[in-house]
Image (cartoon, helix red, strand yellow):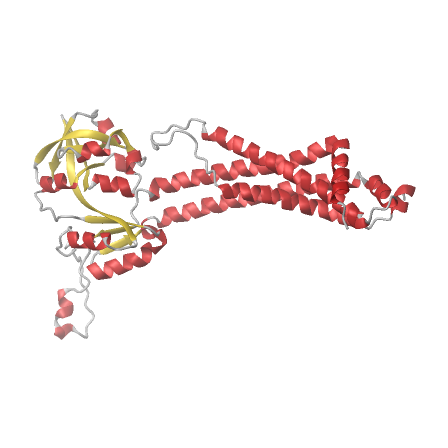
Length: 420
């Protein structure tokens, strides 16, 4: 029967008497795990920030009417040319309304669907922003602001003013940050907008919106849906877009196809809308995990070399232990215990250092006009990274201790004492 108390006491004595080697081995584990935690926390945090910049502003499903040519031209309906090859040049898009037919019943249907977190109507209008002699082309989007805030992180991009201020003002506007800068306007100022028909309406600026994407901030602003409908002279059921948020984003492609067929509208899911971005995101994640795994493997080899040398320095101790009655298995357990103690202590210190460095990075100022809501570098404090770190520390030190100690238990003590 194994006497663990004796084995652990001997292991402790070996570690204390060879403090320099013990500290070196522990630091190898500590810095390997610490570097892994710091790198993976920072890189995944950065990737999540970039993903959210695009994906949080993109609906899971976007319903709208696509302007496109008629698939079946009049010549195809003439039976005399039924067996002929017809060539039609300079086909023009068919005359159709931009609004979604039966938009309100569609919204009601979507909101009653158990898979839908929310559905919001939008009305997009092309117009001109007027301020003195300045005239800028752009878009004004009519929205249900409180629903948009509930279903997305839109509130984070309102850098001045508030969503409630827009909701409470029928003539209010959330002006794009690029437009506000170009026209030298701020909260409380008025901006005049001109429709393509030439009608001019004054709107009061109740907030500044900055998405972080310059091409959007330079042309796009938001107002209440009813306000934009009134500006365009349209009824309350006039809606050009419906944005849908689901509880499960993975269900978006299948549901988009279903809605497109059911309501005869164009339905674009989030994967279609962000195909190139999704590819870039996957590549960044692949690089992050590849570098992290490589770092752990390199650290593992370092840990093995240090522990291997530590055990071979103890060859005379092995001979003495065997000569005094310890079995080969007892000798192996002694050195395995040393390795596991080094792994546990070094791993815990590594987690602490990794967390400390991550927290330090998390508090480093990071200010950019493209990301107004981000004030410090992003860090992902996922608990699984720490579980992986300590698990790797224990597994690597177990392997690093097992291989040489397994050889040590079979060594003849007489040959070691003789020095042969």
